[in-house]
Length: 183
Image (cartoon, rainbow, N blue to C red):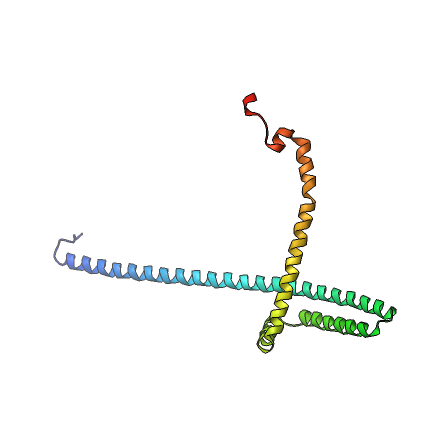
């Protein structure tokens, strides 16, 4: 058995240690690279899954919108029939054209790919920006009316909540006027 202190042992031991250190260093680099690649793959997979989920949700909402537009077209057709029955043929012609256009929009939404819809909207915005701005304004007004009507419905239920409060708690609590010196 030789020791590192015997002749030539120190040099061999140092060379072995240097080789081992270089090997460890390379192993660590390989592990870091492998871990980095694994994390990058997981991130790509997560992003892809998020995109697929978003596209699925948007397509589902696009289908619901197409159904709503079809319902509006049906309602407009009902109004068209009523107008014709009352002798308002000219106005009925306009409403019939509106119903046909709504049906075309619904078919377009139902049958067209989402990327194509986006491209078509961008093209329309470039060609007729006033129309797109007007449509956005109209959507904003409709959203505001919807939110306002939702708020009113919530306030209609508020008196019932107040009556329940009065039933369960004495007047002192309801008005905040109880006497703290009575205790």
